Length: 294
Image 1 (spheres, one colour):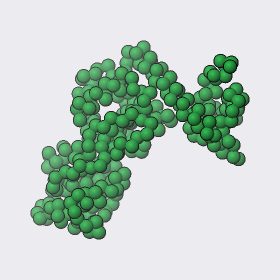
Image 2 (cartoon, helix red, strand yellow; image 1 turned 45 degrees about the vertical axis):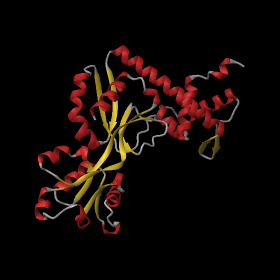
Image 3 (spheres, one colour; image 1 turned 120 degrees about the vertical axis):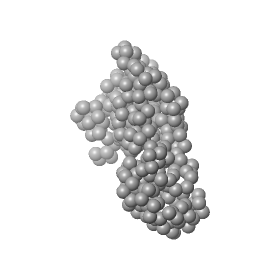
Image 4 (cartoon, helix red, strand yellow; image 1 turned 135 degrees about the horizontal axis):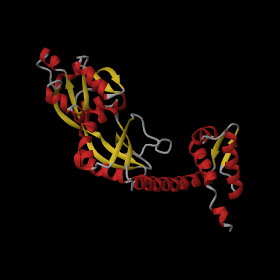
């Protein structure tokens, strides 16, 4: 067999991989800064070179064939290794190791940033660029190297290091507890319950833990960011159920009070990254520091 058939040009492979990932020539063209027709021609050239159909075209849409899907899966891993090797070489050559880290906004501001100076003290040659993200990260469509997220450990295709089991605690404003000194875990159902939209089942989990009837829940407003919920609790709008790791300062300063003991959540904090980034020196340093610190 002609070796050329086994080693298509990088431009053909990149066009196919982007089109396969999006199942769209238009979105692939936007990502690669090409025209839609250029992407289509490159995919057709690759199909002719390999003598196989990689896509089925249905009107303006393209759908991967079975062999196309298998080829895309293997090719994405290979391209990821090439990108990772290039990043490592660039980092070593420049002498400056940087890391683009996505993190949950409240975790980043309340836990990570106050401690990041200790990381810099231990690793003065590394720079961490922080990006706030609530939604899941598409590492193939962004330049993010790693992310800190919270979940139940289901991260297909990613390397996941569990950092910390989420401990949920009920919080209230000091003014609320002064108005009602009898406020305890058992009469929490009488209060307006604030929640974070990304963890809408937290109160149901808490009620089940304490064997309290779910029908007695008085659900109040929900918030996209935990920091907004914390401010709402401080303002006396209601009570909240939040990770203790995010409100340690407020509890210590008396700005908030906890009602009862924390309960272990089903979720944990994880450091996530694609396997191709495994050997990035900056990522290895941050991973070891996070595991030790948290």
